[in-house]
Length: 296
Image 1 (cartoon, helix red, strand yellow):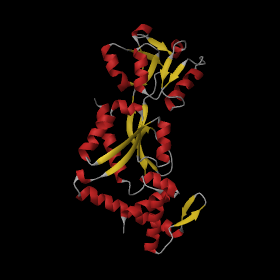
Image 2 (cartoon, rainbow, N blue to C red):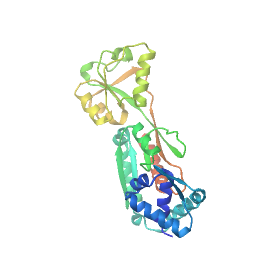
Image 3 (cartoon, rainbow, N blue to C red):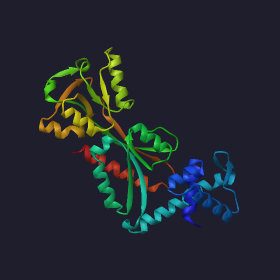
Image 4 (cartoon, rainbow, N blue to C red):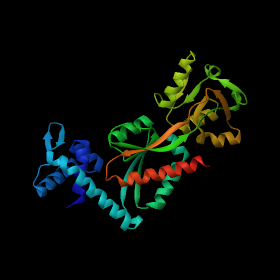
């Protein structure tokens, strides 16, 4: 039996339409329809009930899910355990955030290439909310983000936390002393993208202290925020790994702000189904690399 047809059956079942499965498998809707028709003919059973706007599993199709996942898992386990690592050819779609890109994503990619040199990593960098939406919709295989993502059918792996830091160019004169958020109200602030969890937390702190809302410039690009902070455009709240070099050189001052900003909780997230072995393996690699980074 053609494993590609089994894989196509599973993705149509998960996404609920031939069109969505075709996008996920990087093929045409006609090819997906043909594979399903061929598989149904070979089995002598209808796996789906056709409906306006999509399909749903037939009773036979519902019974077929678990055996199909077992079959795909066994095939992947066979390829991983018996085949040479460089012969494992597959594309894994990974969504991640700029904080991880700037911290340890390069070491993660290097480790994956050492273990599975035949894998292609298709990377997308977005906000945590954007990446969470993509993993929920199964548009990506693995999410590395601020989590967890609490959605049925998803598994979260703890990647530890990442410290944040308030920084400013020396010209602001804020380094070397304890300051509060009240000291920042009249200053331009550079911080995480609007409506992200860190941005919401910061706004809530100003509200709870009954302080006026400061002028805030938001960006999901930490490299852009760093450049602006170095140029003295504003006081910046960023993840600590991004600013370490600038702090060490004296280009930026580390600010002692009360209340301290909480660390960001990071997670690897993937679909929790039996044949999803590669995202599971890569999430373990991510956990190892993140742990090594915290130990530096």
